[in-house]
Length: 260
Length: 285
Image (cartoon, rainbow over all chains, first blue to last red):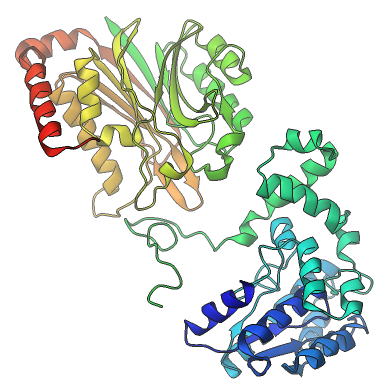
């Protein structure tokens, strides 16, 4: 189904290729496997976009995926692009710097979408989207995203089924925006814990009390719910001030697939 | 006999009932001296609730914490509030409650859920299925919620059921920019309010909220019409405010002596013809 999704949504708008960032992590690896199967490896361009502090494992791990699938690839060091901005703004903390790096990568994906005549394939998973563990208009930017309705835990299962290299399956998840960053360290809980809670809250429509009855700590439930609430804006398009009887986003309703 | 109305056009916090309840109590205080304070549609919860609907429910009984407070407040002043009602079988209604002297006098469940253009109510709400007038200490009244009074049959039914006082509460979005002072949607609500007051020789009081929800604005503009169709009170557009109106209920008698539309209304003819139309055309709305 996921490969059918990629094939349909790419080809119906007269494209045949996708471009995506390949970090060396499990999510983008899975997306590469799906895209290569859907469109053929020659139609997939994987961009490796390291910064000088990126984990030394990232490039070789990404290379394993590129070699295994025979997809096209390109490596661009973003250090000379973002460092002048960092040098001019010495007060930037790691969050701001991480956001700039994520958005610089987005710029390069979209530039290559023109150069390679391809749609940008998103790789954000359902856990990240719900928790808002993304940079808005950075790593969450894409034309289509096959991963977005699969929790991290499910993506791990999918990675196993697809035969993603074991070393990638086994590594600790990280946005790799600064040295030693781990997603679970930053969030304060493991993906398995939060995925099983999100599954009850979102998929099964449990209310918070029912989650507590099911064995989750009250604090954990409240923290996660509040995070989901605060990040709703990242999952939506900008608000348009409605004044007319027919407004883009409210009552001008057509699918993107309109006419295809 | 006089009836002092206070029409509240307020903003709400989306899905935050405690804050909205506080605001109700503030307005009830501000309206001291009024006989009835009317709040807009879904005044306790906010409007575009979507998947929040089940999280902001209340039940109109003294055991419910929100209604316990409101019933207490209704000892001095009658109240009409908008809320999310959950029934015993977990259906959610967009409802309005009329409270007086610590009792729930009437509940109206919205019977028309707009599900077109910008509206998606049919997706989130259960449909109310009754339109009834009810007795208050100021006379017989009827309550309709927004889309309910865009259908002429509802005010007509209330009229036939004895209502002389029509209370319309809305969350009406500003839409249709024109060269006039107000939006298309505001003009419509005012036109029909005035029309119903004239046609039914009755009082019509309507209020609508203000503020924004995800880029959608609500225009406020409470208004009151007497049984001659005269506008006797008018709130501001777009700003939070309290509109006071004193209704001289004796005007009902004078208007109906002048214009005996109610006396002459042939409801049995309506029923006969409607039965025939429904039978012949096989329509089962």
